[in-house]
Length: 114
Image 1 (spheres, helix red, strand yellow):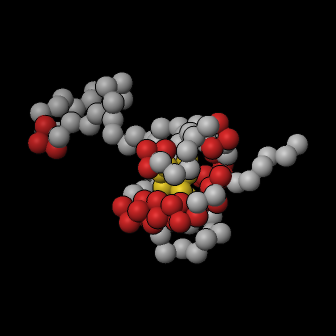
Image 2 (cartoon, helix red, strand yellow; image 1 turned 180 degrees about the horizontal axis):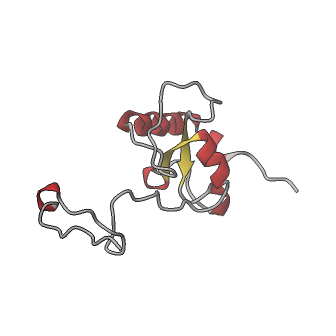
């Protein structure tokens, strides 16, 4: 089964410019939400890679800014050719317990001991 040429390398200049533009934004990994050390050499598991949101194998464009996002190499490898999940959200939602502001701590009743 022949896959054909790699579309990411068909227009190396456009891909390189896109990769550099995304790197300049300094965003965290879109897959895990952790910061990316953009100075790490290629091949390092925590280095920067350009990830396609809709994989090229599923019809996504490797040259459209709307279809790419920054990712760690290891996160991108684990994702494979699946569609990207939403990154973890560190903000509490309505279902999670929220801590009251510190100025309200004294207003709360102490717990009764059994």
